[in-house]
Length: 327
Ligand code: SF4
Image 1 (cartoon, rainbow, N blue to C red):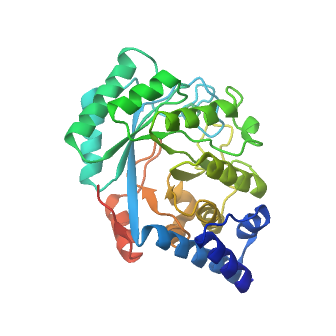
Image 2 (spheres, helix red, strand yellow):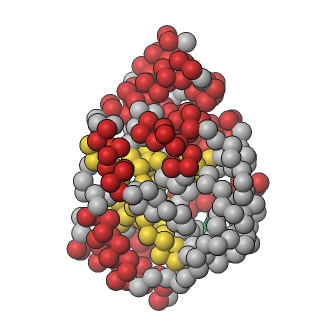
């Protein structure tokens, strides 16, 4: 095994793509074999990023009442959850969030709204105005996550200075119908392509522990590689009461590390950030995410759940001997 992992790592470092069988071997590794893959993923990350990591933060700018039925999501109107519902925040609130995220060392600030797509008119204009102001008054990179895009919306975001568009595929194409039936996977793929075509970077990943198979985790990684996404947020299910996935606990901390390593081997030079579900799924292994190949993490609160306190995360970065890349 040692020789196989070292040969695979060498090939990835020289530009080759792992085979499906090799990718599956990462997800199936245990014991000392797993640590070989983690060391390989760590080496690949260091080649691309040194010991620098990037932090991102989000604002849940509009919460709840979403017409989509994503099974994991607290904000779907199809589920009865305790998630807050409120209309779009003011421009000032969104900009204030960016200033705070910058002061706390985040590199990227995501403006996230619930819903299938952004409502045209005053609502969209408010988001564009906030993005322009963030670009004019901060150095943080604004990102938007407003659901499905059309060409005109993508162009307007790009023109306003939105650096990155965030839109997760959530899971593998072959598993998506088990998770969402109110829109088609291809609409999500199309949105990713439109955002890229409009000149924005694309942040696109998924959520794990939904009931997908190991093969489907590999399938998602290959899809994201083919799409050429710029950064990949990895989320781990934090099952919310009132959603169809309430009580589901498929992932162990080492499963999360296997997933991070898989994505690092498949997307060796892309930003890979550990986002929602870090605390409940990785538990004592949170500091291992960088040694498994992650180049960043989300700090602060998530969309509908709380993150842990900032000082604890800062201590973890110091302990892991990674350097936060300020914007
Ligand atoms: S994940 Fe997004 S699209 Fe799906 S229900 Fe939640 S807010 Fe709506």
